[in-house]
Length: 217
Image 1 (cartoon, rainbow, N blue to C red):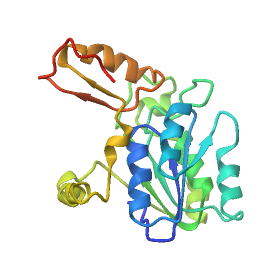
Image 2: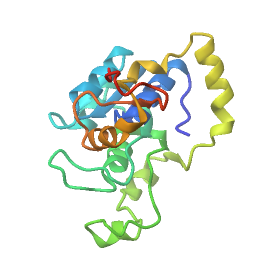
Image 3: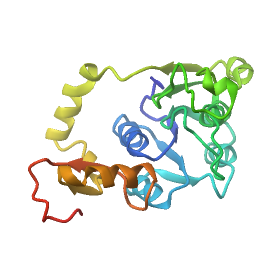
């Protein structure tokens, strides 16, 4: 959806499983430079393992960091992999935060792919706009820069066979993000740790047949 082609520079918002897969996918598609913005050191370390540049937005301005990496031009492509629950380093929820970061970090005529989840309504949101499923994005800048934006739910069947074959051929190894393999009765605790962004909980595989005596990795 971002339109990544060989030689592109790509900035990715979010280093959760979706963002890390986007980083791996951009690399496979031939991106010359991949930058991943997050603030969890363990997740940023995983991004670095596949050659991505880690940008900790709790320490630096991510837009300026991207500009510094791209001779002031901005990235060719951006990927939003956080969604409507985006928040600042202080924990304040801001639905538009990652979208606005990308609009400002992606160059003129660049492309943005939005795969993070956004919802039509969010009754639990703190502000009235977000409750209606709306986000205060910087559309004027987006329009002025002539950027394109693709979004929507993943059309899984469009990609699953290609991805399977990449894995089977050894061209893609997504298992590097797996942090835990657990039995089914450990799932509730695993969900709590993942939701809390506990250190080193990046991707969990639930195996119903696993013995409860076997400890998670």
